[in-house]
Image 1 (tube, helix red, strand yellow):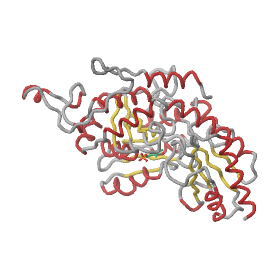
Image 2 (cartoon, helix red, strand yellow; image 1 turned 180 degrees about the horizontal axis):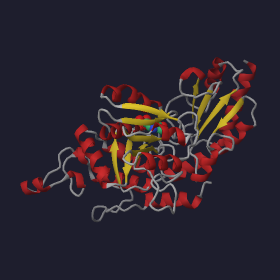
Image 3 (cartoon, helix red, strand yellow; image 1 turned 45 degrees about the vertical axis):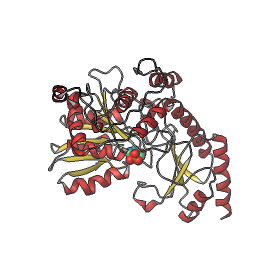
Image 4 (cartoon, protein in one colour; image 1 turned 120 degrees about the vertical axis):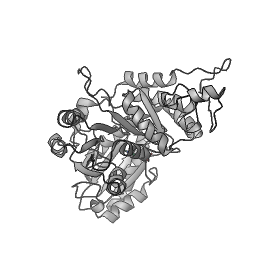
Length: 403
Ligand SMILES: *Cc1c(COP(=O)(O)O)cnc(C)c1O
């Protein structure tokens, strides 16, 4: 269940995170620094500088005090020790794949994963001689069967991107550790955001700790919160793995702009509170949806009857702001498109976790909805009043009845 004390702790951590302001200028907000060139004291200092250890500044692409501050706060948020920034959440997935996989290796991806992760594997990775296999994240045995000596990387993504099934995270990680001890376990933490569960400590009290090796996060979503910035991160606990990824990051020339870093730093101060508010509103809307005859299923990990609800309840303290409605298959997909058009408060658009609620319909033949026979509408609940959103949904459903 959502635990307010924990949300307060995360907020408090972000707002009071260590920051040393310039002498005599103790503003609450960290300063925004921008640079390509960073000057060295002398040639000896230039020769002695090592960008990888982050104790010195060497070049804009290798980080500024502003980007290092954001990295430190993200590592805290997700329970890691190191972080790096990339231009989008998808770029974070690509960085991990490119850094950890070589020709002849195989990556495992959950069948219900974020579609561009699969697309990257099917096109770019395939061209480089890297294979991929899908597994059913709701069946630990399916993952175990897909593991082999060729598997160097396993992606986990809770919950499913559109269908929101919540997997047994502990079971999946244990299967990889037992049957492919050399494989790296990467978790897409965009939905959990470091708030719903601890990716690096999935079974508190277990020794040794049970956790993934790294997380990626679309900062575009909750950390930004404004629907106005694209950024991604990789968070880790291992120095060796960090160094490997950081070298690839450097060689690829991946950097982020200082203004965007500033926006995400600002967003992080309210991420826990926004997440909790969106979570609470989404639960209320899910309960309302259970009482409507137009929907044959309400997919939302914290709602009983949703696939993987028991896993969610055993592993999570919060549930984000996504909710997918499975319409009665008797309702024609064109009428559901009209239902989405008729919504006044829900925008039609990609992404989620911003202030404005969004709705996207997925037809059964879209290849993204598993075996559900009817059209699905995924709602991202924003920061509007939940009662207003329910009234908007009701009025669009009235239009559906008349159509
Ligand atoms: C949005 C999203 C991404 C990609 O983030 P972008 O910043 O839009 O590239 C990756 N994974 C998940 C689960 C997402 O929802």
